[in-house]
Image (cartoon, rainbow, N blue to C red; front, side, top):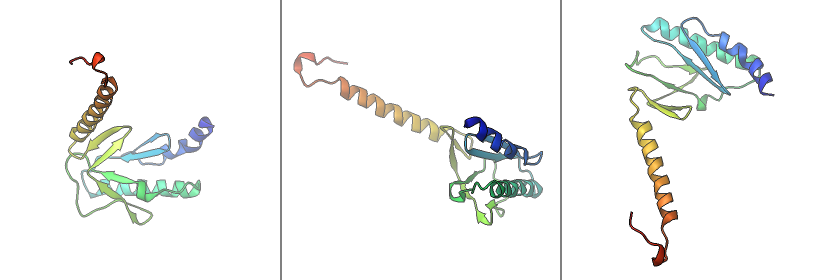
Length: 141
């Protein structure tokens, strides 16, 4: 079944132009490009339009409310916005990609804070499991 799915969506990776990169992982699609001028944005938007056409042709609707745009590094032109089928794509300051939180500043503070909080929670659970109410087994750590 997975092989059939890969063969089915494999054509999606080939529809973007040479300046826009399309990456597939399971049922996720990522389009990215380096935007230096308005022309680069137009290329990205045309790639988004081709993805929409592909999804309509293959009867796989895109859930625009689950789509997001993150601008890494310097902000590009603030007066232009991505859209899919006329619906604006939500621009976010950070995105979780394969378990890693990536911020617009390309720093990993949010990811590090998330991992530290998760580790502290697990350490607290381990300590709670090791504690005994019986005075005979209490020891100092």
